Length: 90
Picture 1 (cartoon, rainbow, N blue to C red):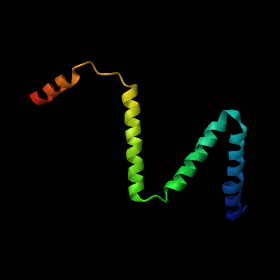
Picture 2 (picture 1 turned 60 degrees about the vertical axis):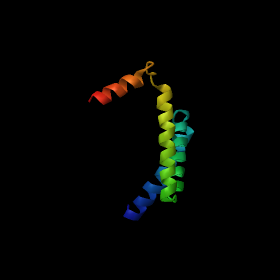
Picture 3 (picture 1 turned 135 degrees about the vertical axis):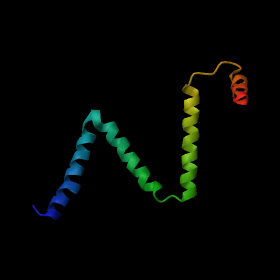
């Protein structure tokens, strides 16, 4: 098989069939759909300006920080006072 034919078969035919296989299997369908959505997002984000990318990253960081704060163990009352005293003593 020539290199061009091998590339055609491996990149177009086999990858397409593998993608269809993943969509057909119920246990793999969600992963295939999420993967396709991620690729679409990456393709769309490639055209973003530097400012748009920076805004998106900051929004994601804020979102993740909010989630982490909501899921973390809450500090006991007065912890800020003791933390401030500890930092001043150093």
